[in-house]
Length: 378
Image (cartoon, rainbow, N blue to C red; front, top):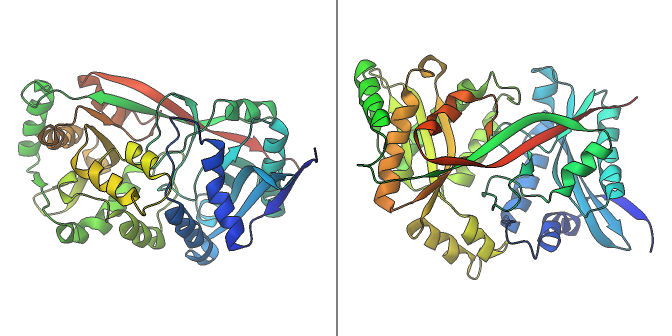
């Protein structure tokens, strides 16, 4: 058997192989949820071409006798390096067979890029910005990932620890059981009404996507204000805002977005929720056609599980009970749709302001993920 080799992704076929590798690696894993192949390819092309000199990204494949055995992306977010003053090279979209040598070879490629750009640390798995996927699964391997999180086998973190990486940032995810609205916690309802009246706030309900568009830019601006003190934050760029509006608005049911404004009409909080697409994506197996879009469409209307995708609260209103308004409104939506369970997105372990909201409901922490970091040797 020949030794391993690392090649850089250059051609369209190489990029498709990069995207398809997890499909073979996890073909028999019931918990891995595939992405949509075309969307991934479009996403990577956007990363290569849509940011100009704000981002550098290289993709690598590991092969053995022409068989792909691993993949990794090396990412430099120059906003992070030059403005946030974190001299990191990121690695992301990392998947590998259970062979620590392959892991070492892939990460050495990323380290080389960091070293050649005078960077000090390598950290990952992470995407290119605050809005992208982040974190390697370290607990919850028998749970399906959501459409905006990665899945990986338990041996990934073992590999990283063996070659000198240590945990840097951690996230937790929760599964929350929903009762009927009448049986939901009275404390949450009471606080919601109290805060709405005290601060003269108003909940906006939407019936079509065109009503959402005027608030979309404000939502992304509010994301920045909500999370800018957290350790993984990088300022969101206009290119990202335009890209994510185009990418995700088509999936959003307008009834599943709630905005809260003050008496001046200024956005002070919002949430985006969706049905869980995990089972539908599993059935689609990477393709919208011929039947994949039908599975996704069915998930929009026939589902028992929902997902929190994004929450933003202006710093002036954090710790003032606005989270109770958000969840009270979400409870109404999920009850109307007959959802029994809602799953949160990854929440930074230090972000107690959001996590405290779940204490009033029956819940379980069912996943945990982390980034791993290492100093780049000279």
